[in-house]
Image 1 (cartoon, rainbow, N blue to C red):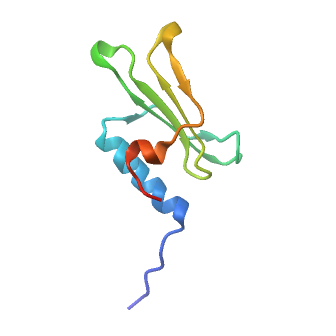
Image 2: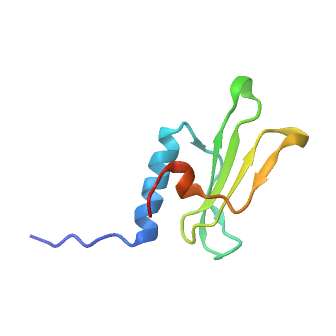
Length: 94
């Protein structure tokens, strides 16, 4: 029959990132936005609520260029990690 061609690396990892984020309890928080780095509509925001609806973690990652940022906690004690090692956080080997 037909030959199945391999997916481009960024597309293969994008699908794995989405799968791993859902497995960890993250939910899509916003629609896809324009990435400031590569200027493509590929930046997704994922959210995980902390205990009693406070705190948690937000992750914003571009599925095209791989740029990722993370926010932990809430209020004045909120911690921003940029750049954020999303692949390492999810345990995906590249």
